[in-house]
Image (cartoon, rainbow over all chains, first blue to last red; front, side, top):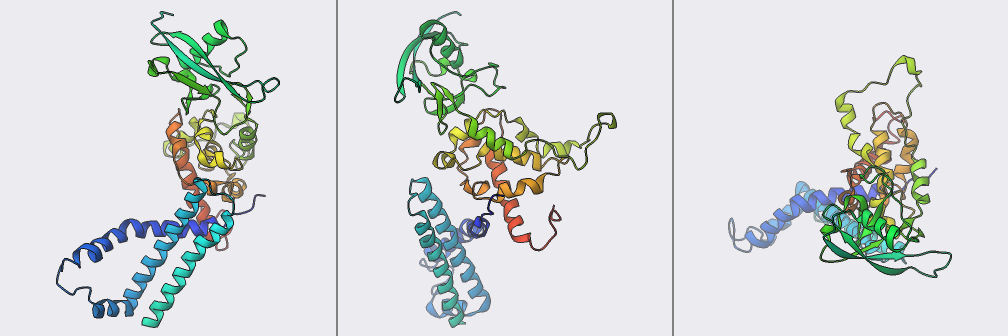
Length: 118
Length: 250
């Protein structure tokens, strides 16, 4: 019997990250990259105090955790498979550890920072 | 054949018993509006060089024998026409990613073994004698698998698939599309037997959804959709296998 692949774990994270990347990130770019610097809807809307209070609240922390960690899993999964397509085969297991390791480390760091902020 | 013009056809030649490596030979072939690329090859074999080897049978895009690379694109030579390439020229090569048997004929063994491995036939819950009548099905049940049953095993999708080119261990587009065709047939109960093949790295997980397989399919089959539907099925199978008895999630 062929060996069952563990890819569903990574593919599920990739898929969930894809939803975040498609629906949430564009909105965040508009809000944090365009609207807030232009002082919309009001100046200081992303001031340190406000953002820090948002990150310290439970819904805010959960939102940031989901957006940051799933985007990392999505991006590194895509990079890993793209490298294979570009002809990087040797040492692909090292690349795999580097890619998913970075996503895991980013997830852990995000969780740590958010938990200590709450 | 009402001849209007001539076109240059460059053909990959390789006779393993005499040639150390493949080389190209160019032939000038007269053609009319309705001359297919396959007829161009037949002209070469009949009039110019009888040693040219290629496969063909039906001449009407149903047997799946005459797939080749035409200017680098996998295509059935019977349904491509020389006029489409004039005034340029054509380069005809055997299907990419498959070993050459002789000239334009490829060795299909790898695919045929993979095809057999997915049990490409209906496995009924209990067998029925002919006089007991057919297994019936609603139009909606038929619609679920119909497009996948149109596959003619021409292997254009294997020549198109970059993942199969990188690693021929991958089960590949047509075999997975046919696996999905039988798994989604209401008369079939072989899904549990076929799932281990889907769940393996060499099953659906070697696919990165490039989608070129579906683009080159001459029969309108969408292997990329079959493979990616099965990524969802395989993921559910992965996470829910401990929660429900086998087959209960269907």
